[in-house]
Image (cartoon, rainbow, N blue to C red):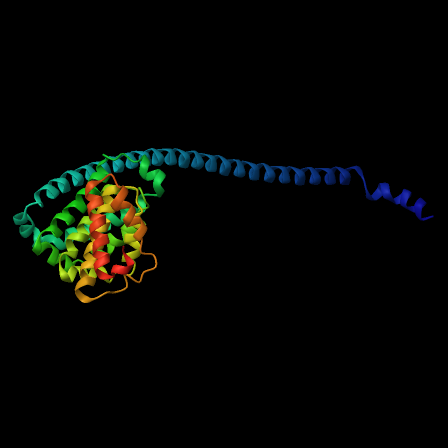
Length: 302
């Protein structure tokens, strides 16, 4: 009955106009949704185009910046090479000039800043020597090495003059510590020329009683000398022995200290240098060192 009633009344309620109206409303709604989606799509596309444009702009800027960076690095390298070359030439000239006592006296009043730069430069250079392989690959005639050698040479020449060594003994303790510390860091066979100059500077300072006292108080002095005596370079061994002779002289004056009691005292190495070295000055200095040791404690050095 209900179905029959629905069949009878439904055409009267749902006529063609209503269906058409519903279809039209649905079509309009779908059209609105499509338009909204189209607008959103256009908006997203616009944002995408803007992002791509900005990305391309940033990429071009990065390329420009990278090119500028490479140019800056090249300029910096050129400036560094120029400054190193200028420093090497200037310090080499100063090294030559400082061999005269009058020149050392003239620069003594302005020496503090130079010694500070010398110590920092030596420290930085030794740190840059990353093992024997890198040290051997470096050009021995490079501006950098010549600059460092010249700095050490000036310090050595200053210490060779009485007023200069007195100044270093009283006012350059930081530099003296730096010299000994860098000698500890340099491996055997690495840059022997620099080792020789630093040892010569320390020996010259040790001629002063005050300077020798300060050097003698360095905690690792004896082990440093023992290590340097094992170096394969004859000049390094020679100047290490001369520094040892200064220490022995102090012990002879003030009485035996810790040197003769050191179990690492390389007597056999010194004997070998005294008998087998092909370097005449090294043989003589080694024999003199044995004699000095023998005078302090004869039964230990026969």
